Image (cartoon, rainbow, N blue to C red; front, side):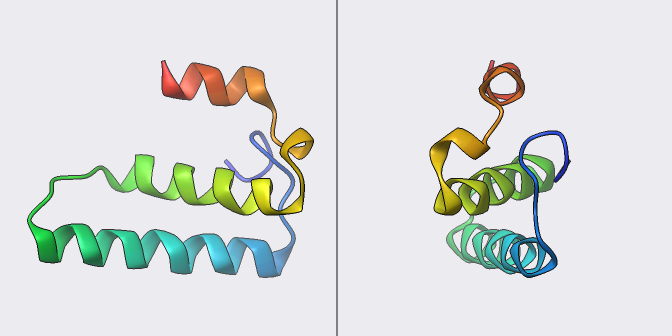
Amino acid sequence: MGIKVTKLQPVGGSCAKTAGAATLFMATFLGIPVSTTHTITGAIIGVGATRRLTSIKLDITTRIVL
């Protein structure tokens, strides 16, 4: 996942896992049903977007969203 959507460094992977876990905890606390796969995918895209938007492969991201 981290290679196909965007290239992640080890620290970026750690940040994506932390952001995904925080999102899951918050959603669970609020009683919102979420998918763990979609949550971690969103976190990986978010970490890739912090470097620059062109580092995200838009064709794969678009297929995930659709």
